[in-house]
Length: 142
Image 1 (cartoon, one colour):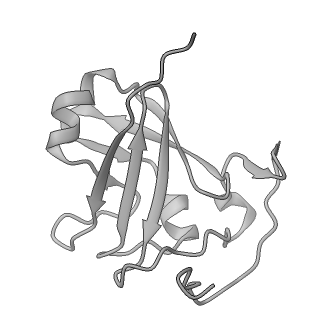
Image 2: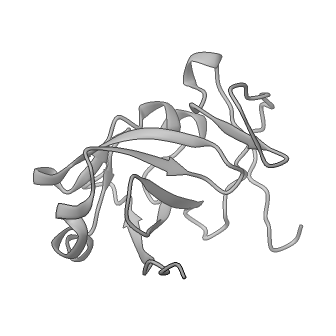
């Protein structure tokens, strides 16, 4: 019988006064409870299976080295990042626009800015196919 790990859900607000491109500020409530359990090298997994490598910096309560992810998904101040953590090295991620609409997770940008893996049909691939889209899909109307 396997034990189910408790998933901790929390939100990272990218308010302009704390915004730094490529860095997610984690709430103190999360770092106080879970901060010592999080390894330095972590991975962020998005809904379509893209996996981004980041670095957890405990003394600054943040995840850094996410510059390419921020550029690919055009993360700016006021975007809301919802994280799910169940222990280990992986965080689940959902990203919402300043208007509360979940973004389109189509990967954009040059090959040097692609995630380390993507999932297509349940298998992991080392390639990402790019579509340049200048708009976000409103999933409420889709």
